[in-house]
Image 1 (tube, rainbow, N blue to C red):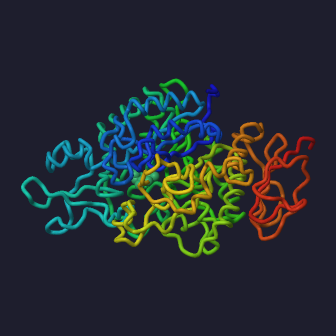
Image 2 (cartoon, helix red, strand yellow):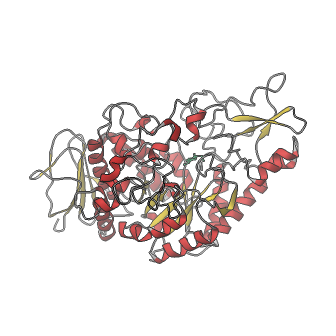
Image 3 (cartoon, rainbow, N blue to C red):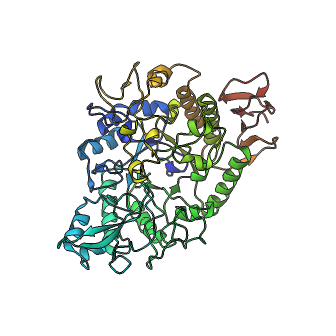
Length: 550
Ligand code: NOJ
């Protein structure tokens, strides 16, 4: 493995959604043994690291984001020993390993929460969570008007030992995910110990779940607008639970923990903020290292919108000396092939479920190919969500009884949730399980038969496939000195066309307009996302050009 001191500043990190990546034991759910088997695939794809979604012991009320034991691996996924072997094996393939850490909430089955329920009102055990009396004469109204991100209220009332309705506890997500009280020193101490537990086992960093939500306003005020789940209408840092300034005290101490280990360990924040300068606060030199750029993911397939995001991101991150971390898809949003395949509501609110309007997946895939070349040409690093390298679209017709995301039930079956981007990967063969597990495996979510055309096996060696485009892009990006961390400059281009230059001698042109665009002067076409027409770049196509003699 390269000993480059800051590998994370321009890394390509592949998101392994463990449930859906590869199932070695045939129980229908992916596992760590499956990841280990596929390490050669990931090495050949050319990624620098993997982020693995939560593998901890969990009742799986929210696909593992409800952690019962932070120091043990869920038997569905394997054992602690297998996780340790994964780290060793991945390192031997030159791949770093970044697990997911869930500090905002635990499972309601976590030992601390069971103890809190048993110990009763006013007990020290309840102080580690957020228990409050209800409002109204009988305390039967929740303490605040906050809503759960999955629908319904954010407070659940417990029944006390005497059988009477008692206190309420806070859960910004499902009721099975009680929020921790980060004002409590034991909470902070426990998470530093958990970081050390895994750093001692060689992991290279952590992805921090809900990094913007840990600290709440101690006054617990109502939110101004219950229908607005964001902090957009608030002055920066003043929302009752999102992106409060004190949250950075936590990350300053985590940074000290990470820095006390050899080998350049890193944190990536999942922080949904209202503005790039708020995101930049998470990645100051004494805080977390990087943060997903969700503004890029949220942007429409529109040259002006993307340019605005790129400019605002790079400017605000430069001020704090952090690299950008681009992202197009993850396990929480509609896959970008489907987002870009909608002309009605591309991007923006269309990242949530269910998307509206007819989808043109051929258009979406063409744009996704171009988006990859644009993304990989930008300064910094980027994430690849498993399956995007295969060009998978959102599975929008999962049967109702297959849906498992808590959003489905919590929304009164109005929001189908995120299962459509979580369907197990197609690796090989002509029918489900498409090599996801041994023959006869029933994947935990059904795979569409059309995925026969998108298996790794089918795409390998086909120069026009999405997979070969990803392989070529990642390989070239590694080789070209102009790419990775650094600066970029825009080159003049007509409306709807994005042309950016990196030094030495590299230009990426992306055509988001309706008309073909003549290629600028160049010495070499390094890579194109689709066929070039004579000297022109067709709509929804991107190209990398070499300018060796200019
Ligand atoms: C963000 C995770 O990505 C999502 O999957 C999860 O449901 C919530 N955080 C709650 O942990």
